[in-house]
Amino acid sequence: MGKFGLSLEQELESLGRKAAAGGIARRFAEDEGRFDALSFRLDDLLLDLSKCALGRDDLDALIRFARSQALEERRDAMFDGAPINATEGRAVLHVALRAEPADGYAVNGSSVGEEVEAVLSAMSGFCEGVRSGSIASSSGARFTDVVNIGIGGSDLGPVMVALALSPYHDGPRTHFVSNVDGAHIADTLKGLDPATTLFVVASKTFTTIETMTNAQTARRFIADALGEAAVGAHFCAVSTALDKVSAFGIGQERTFGFWDWVGGRYSVWSAIGLPVMLAIGPQRFREFLAGARALDRHFREAPLEKNLPVLLGLAGWWHRVAQGYPSRAVIPYDQRLSRLPAYLQQLDMESNGKHVGLDGARVSTPTGPLVWGEPGTNGQHAFFQLLHQGTDIVPVEFIVAANGHEDGLKEHQDLLLANCLAQSEALMKGRTLEEARRQLLDAGRSPDEAERIAPHREFSGDRPSITILYDRLTPFALGRLVALYEHRVFVEAQLFGINAFDQWGVELGKELATGLLPVVRGEETPEGRDASTRGLVRAIATMRS
Ligand code: F6P
View 1 (cartoon, helix red, strand yellow):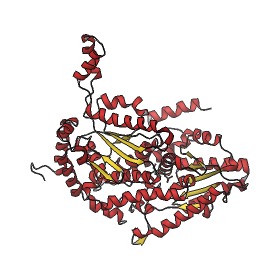
View 2 (cartoon, rainbow, N blue to C red; view 1 turned 60 degrees about the horizontal axis):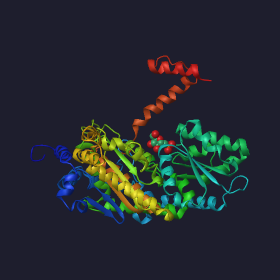
View 3 (cartoon, rainbow, N blue to C red; view 1 turned 135 degrees about the vertical axis):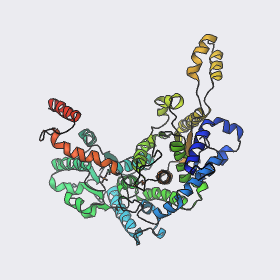
View 4 (cartoon, protein in one colour; view 1 turned 120 degrees about the vertical axis):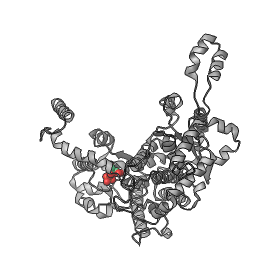
């Protein structure tokens, strides 16, 4: 208990409200050293928290809170392979996927380094074979296109990373099919030649209905065009359920495994990254892993006061719980990170969208926020109006590289950077009514008109944002960035007191869909269901051709 008989958490909530009311712009005027005090670095990776309504004392109190929540002990338990995913009785060791064997990660006392390395080398051999043409299609042709079939964690990671690292692509083109909507696979296959297309069926459980349905359709695509005998040469698989892969008819030598201690949304570092490795090659893929490893070491070793994922997590908790903001926007000023917000939605919302704590009781504070976003500058011309002048405050996370890959297009990067900096400055500084009035008068408007329009052109300012900056989006930098967000989610989960590693909330819809399939097909009546579902089923039946 603190000095007023309040828990540290309650004290922080009151500090948070006070800090929000105290604004942000004012703090810069009062404290020249604010940027230096509230920006943090790991090599070229810079995390700027100075444009948040957060004082140095607040940050100290937040760090005390993190310690009181046993953050360091929980972090160490994760790295030690303890079964911290308590509702599923599993270890959480995606960090082992990007480790060096010497890091010595183990689950239940058994070292996992060798197995991880064995799968990585098998993937590398397969990818080199496909990329060089020595592993070829049924007709002996080199594969030109790879289609990954998976959903959720078996899709979003590879999609996001493949796009982000497109300057490094020198292998076959990659495509991704996830939705069970037949339009997705139909549109993808339309432009592809079955004779030179390789499918990767990616599913941790190998039971996910969307993936299995799309995989069967892909199988028919090959069998119809090239004959049944060709199927084996055009498929490979990634899964933890090796028996189910073999029942599907994919050979062992083309199956890449991973383990139940890797959560789906944390699996892009595993064999789930196969389409990425096919596109950029094993060496670049290892650089991506190395970036994540650098961040893992930092998370494990740096003091909390300088620890980037800890600080990002504390700022997230501050915004969500102490200041009560229900959502956060992630805005990469990088077109190639356009799938990062979708990736982070699964990472964050499937992990921290929970209302029951580790102790089994309902939590007493809000948990994970709604995460959303689109790349800048496009977002500026769409939803930034609400960010600047809407009635809700949405903390924004700007992500940007100092340098692009397009050496001949430097003026684009200059504009991109200027826009990114301008948005966080505008959110923080705003524009007063008086400034708005003055601008209108200076532009030749009459005093009456200036009076009428000025309130619409006033910006409250004091809207929080975080900026994450790095040199260039290389495989290493991307690995580090994704690991930063993974550990941030972990940190927030400890502060919320929840388990970030299960996802029971997605089960109910899946179960009901299974039950509704015969009803939609007309094989069972909708009787006994609620009136809305009955009505919709009947309406669908009248429209089905
Ligand atoms: O929808 C829930 C979920 O289990 C995710 O957690 C997972 O990433 C996705 O489905 C796909 O699962 P799988 O890889 O087993 O097909």
